[in-house]
Image 1 (cartoon, rainbow, N blue to C red):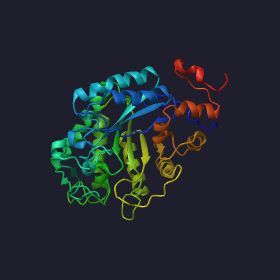
Image 2: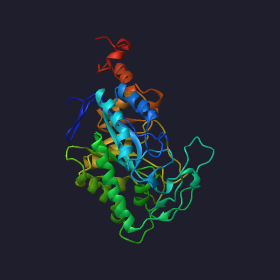
Image 3: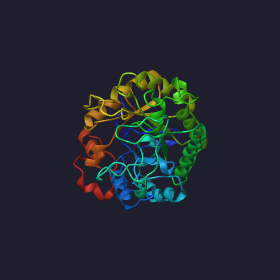
Image 4: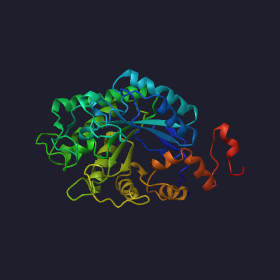
Length: 358
């Protein structure tokens, strides 16, 4: 049996993804009133010219209060959705596929861009009251208001509406952001969810909101469109969400029609000790894939072509997500293919820069 390469195609539902080197969602804090503009067109367009098979738009809020910062994009209205259309069209013209990560920041919202001189956005700067599963603050941030059951139901429909707007402007993949300490993560972890109603308590209660959204979004988008979920596989702290929980949740997702788990970690609790190193989150992807059979992508300090190739070839993940390495070199896939001796399609404008002989 031949091993799979990062430059092999991957078919998910009706989507044919040209390779398995994907661009991870990365916050840019550069939208205005949730509307993306020139920065995003150039930023995301660079990846489209660089050979990535699937490009993800950063965490995009489904309601104004769902943004991480005042500069984060949204897709709660048609103007915001239409602003993505030229980006999507350009990615497609380059032979790439493109997805959007739908998000709600919860208690980690209402911030200023990270290069600002203060963290929390005041009301006169466009700030808002944050919400969460329970009134438990994240380190150094205001105490959030607990969401009501009615508000949870409304948010579920906000996610569905956002997904449908995204499909209308041509996005190929929908991803739900349930990692890094944002709202869904705040619900599923026992460290941040102390509710006594049907959305708290045991595993089923804490994961109910996320499962309901996944189910409703799956039903609300075309059958051929892949649905991904990004999770933090562990909180890296005793008594928190862990890999066993993640495996159980992945089984639930598989039954709900989720196609791939995008496996990250951490972000819920400040100051925890994380054993950061090359590919440090890959074992979580491998465990989820092995135990459930669902497709996974691996992310986290994947920087070298041979490292990425080994992850996919050995079956630890079905694809690799690159983040900061793509910021350093948006054409990493082209360079990686040359390094591995694999000839891939380049933009005709760049053909003369090839180093690999025909």
